[in-house]
Image (cartoon, rainbow, N blue to C red; front, side, top):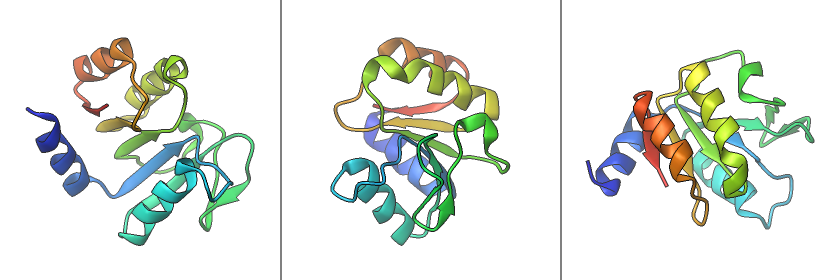
Length: 121
């Protein structure tokens, strides 16, 4: 499946988005992208051990701490920091991972695909 079809599938089948690295700084993509997605009707779940809440939602220190199901794990981390978050996404039963523009980790993407997750990178 080509990347555009994967993006469409993920956006259509997603309700809850865990945002790893959601920023408290409004000028960063890690803030304004999740803010936009929330305005489009998606539930945003902040994942950042350095904040208590963001966008009106409680923040969690890691994916395993989230008490509800997660469809998509949206990653705002440096490429070399991605693998543990992909492993956690697999463990919690997420259906997709999305590494933001400029973030790429082929090994982590391959592990996610092998576990049946859709990957946007």
